[in-house]
Image (tube, rainbow over all chains, first blue to last red; front, top):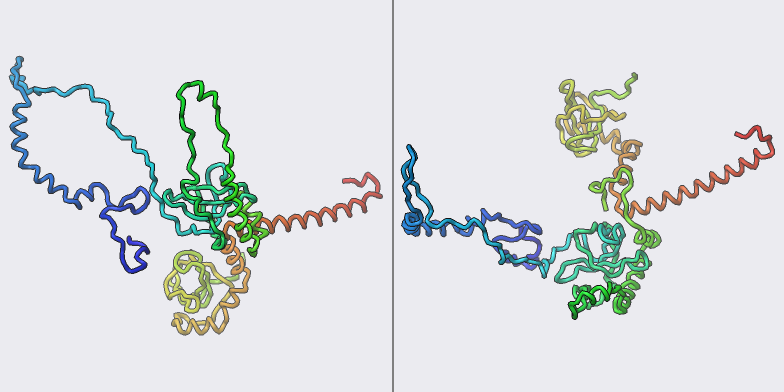
Length: 256
Length: 147
């Protein structure tokens, strides 16, 4: 399973159990149980058994009962368990604050034209710039002039990679455009009174000047690349239009 | 019904299903009502048994003897120049077109769409011109002639 990371000749040291695909680990819980030798732990636990036997005799109280052919006595638990199970208060709501970076599909390389499948820009064809560090999301841009898609993050799962690629080696994406650049800035909750929440209303999102400037630098370089392309007239139309399925087109059979 | 293509020794067949799909081969021997021994040394088909259901007969024939060995089949096939003839046939060209259409990328499909639109636009304008020309020709005639 070791992939091409061992290009320099050294194979990476993988942990015993690792993710083969996102959410799918190589070995199941049962397999790992045997691999880790946890059955040995169970075996070692056996000398503790005679102790439990002694405890068992004290757990039960023998009470005589009447009635014919009833066995004359019953073993009853000395301490009956509570019928009310306690509310689990210690359950941690594990929120993934730092999502794992999903490895980039081989079909997605810088300059690939992608088809967005979800969100307000669904169906639009955009240019892939780079994969953002930390989050692993894809940084794409319309370019804005062609299809109104700004510098934006997109998840790999909601994207179809087409075979069309542009040469964006000369397009420089500013370094400060990263995961934190796109993070939503939440206003500090100063007052907790109801009046303030409803009085303030929804704060409209305004595009910051920084975003506009970055958009301009990236897009002007990108548009230059497109204009120099052999099929530039078609490319302008291609990036400006949306993807749709016609009659007889089966998405699983199409080549993108 | 008049049949023109016969199952016979030397008949060139197109393998439509199964192994070596899409290749040509020559009937070398007939086993029974369902199966035949087929060989295509020049087309990459190893001598073997095929069911007639998987084969489509072509109009080409190669002069070979019954049970001809592979070497002989190859010579006869290449002498007849079947590969060239096949490439130039409508059948092969249609197959090639189908293959190209199935493997168009999204961008190529878009370019085809634009080309089609352009072509149709030209056609419609020409048709419109013809229609108008026809109207002006018919106008002086009586209105009864209106359809």
